[in-house]
Length: 180
Image (cartoon, rainbow, N blue to C red):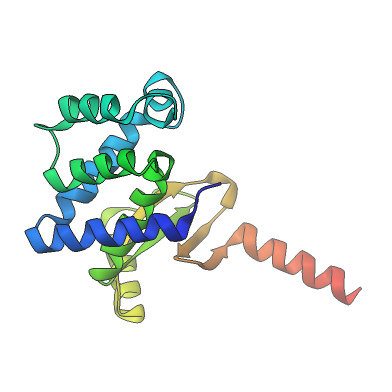
């Protein structure tokens, strides 16, 4: 089991050093890239998390693979994980780092799901209205789901707003079931 509190501590430390050096965004991108490269399965992942492989060997391989490709703060974060035998935390550290970086910018994630693709003007107007209404900037991911029949479903952080035809029909069915 991954210790999210411990991962958050590493993320806070990496973010603080990244802020000091003015490379917050780059460190986040580099850590995410390395986490994707290492993955959650496969030989590279197995090598990275294997407790039987000597730490110095892992450090050397990581340094050779990433030294010229990623920011030194990201590289030293990886090497620290290896030294402390916390390699399995990498994915969670990246999640925490990106969440902290987003919060520092006053942004929040917004998952937008619609029955059809919104045109550029509709999309821009919707996001601008939400940003004014909630006083936040949103990092939006958009997905088309024809099963919604019509309307929108928004997930902002942990808040769900279901304004879809399918959602309204489900709510009506629940209401009819409880009153019957």
